[in-house]
Length: 485
Image (cartoon, rainbow, N blue to C red; front, side):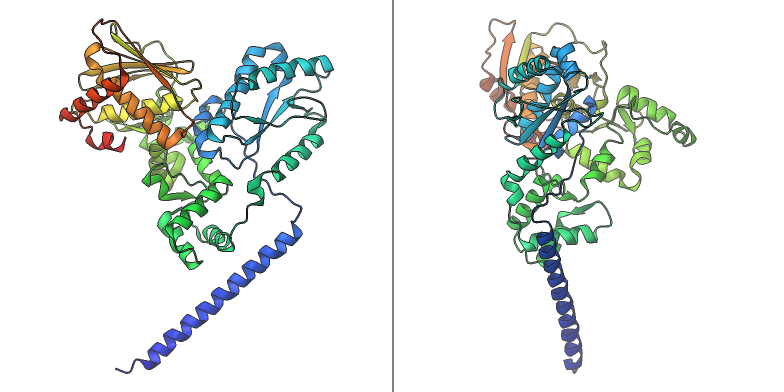
């Protein structure tokens, strides 16, 4: 066969494609250069408003990054009237930012300048703030040098103080090293391709890897570095804790946040379309979700539509949701929606208590621990339904029963003397949380107390013995789960 004409045609088409690609790249570079010249002294901000309701706190680790500049707003009026409550609120947020974005700058903003406006009141509020900050490590508070305060007073009614605040935000942002980070042109071109080519609000890592190759990024290491940088800048969401999470890149973070908050929300504040819910026959499903934190597949499909499986998988991987296999119909547990009740109590007297003292226990840790325990319990040969509330849980692993509850910045695990395996399992789950969600700055001290005089309270030895016990228990379907841990 004479293939010459065919090969000539293929080569001609390839040359045309190469020429088109070169033109695209030249236009892209020209556009970037033009924008750079116009915006030489300009900053572009993406502003994220973190929900003040406690139910949203479990999402912090997804969106708090090193490359942020954080504004913490509080009421000066509340600080004067109810100092303890206001101080706890401020301390919580500062600790949360420090844990997830250590050394990121924090600008504290005091509202209600129209009612709190004397120098004596300013100094009183300032003393309270300095008392909070002095007990913290690694927090970078931006001082209000003009007024000699640790915060910036503003009046939202007539915007007094807002101009000065904006100026400070600009100055602080421009002083951050990442603002002057030199981004390779091939990275920005690849980012543009990601934004131009998506039909979903997320892409698989394999798709991005192909786009990267087409733009001269040929190693997995550089692709990973590029995605991590764009994640830190808040352009995308790229979580690398597990292989499953690493294979999904959300190129529209707002879409991801809105999707999750359709389920994790304060239903008394952010209501639903009651008429539409009733018309679709989902009244009982909503009631079950709000009252018991159990979501049916139907209600999740109502919230998420054709993206339901993506969100289920994403929330399972980030430990915001777990399968609930107890009962006739399969449901999904959303622990952050659990409410306090007095029904969950320790079964009988506990011989052994292990206290995990965290110093600072972020909201969401106990909920995720419950998530993992429920998943583990459901893998038992004859699973027994756990009893759960917002800050306590009674869990069964076959015949092994343990009770855990959160108290302040500590989690207590209570078991019978012969059920020490449960303590070691919680220890392993906490290490999984540290590795995959909370980061290396998430630490704790463990203390065991026992009624038994003969009990050996050396935690390391108990963990060693328990790990052997886990290996021997073939009737408990822990193999895959514990290997993940």
